[in-house]
Image (cartoon, rainbow, N blue to C red):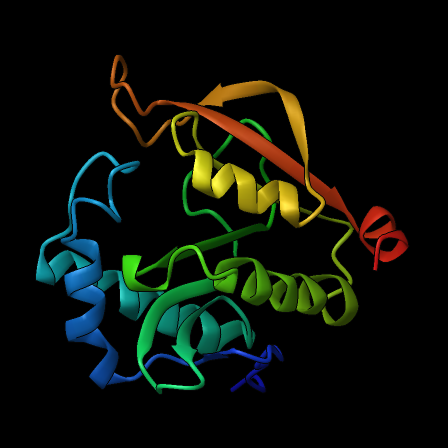
Length: 186
């Protein structure tokens, strides 16, 4: 078993997943507001399977999409972290940074703060040369987080292969951050 990495953040604890996270994660994945930029809401079975994949990836690699816990309240918030996409993308192979938080935690800078901690793991501990992030073109909130992280938009967006052709969410924007740029802005 690989040693678990837990990024450091003042207001968010990023950690391995627990069984007790599953009901809150299922509610988050069934929330139309949270999932507005995804092709569909997730059922409880789909949500539990996603949490298990995240847990298994972390157990194997020590890092991944960590469960995000609000330190002050102890509440499960969603996830933040690093991942190797499971679908071949036009810019694969890559490591992405991503997040999905309950709407209760939006607008407080928590996604940005936790993502910065995840970037530190990616660049300082994993020594990745680059980390990418992507989202549907309509997801302005996530694009704003990417910009606050110092990521730069790649001028060529892409069609996400896991989203059906013709679907409004298929066109995606891509952001990139190289380790040397990240280091120079810290």
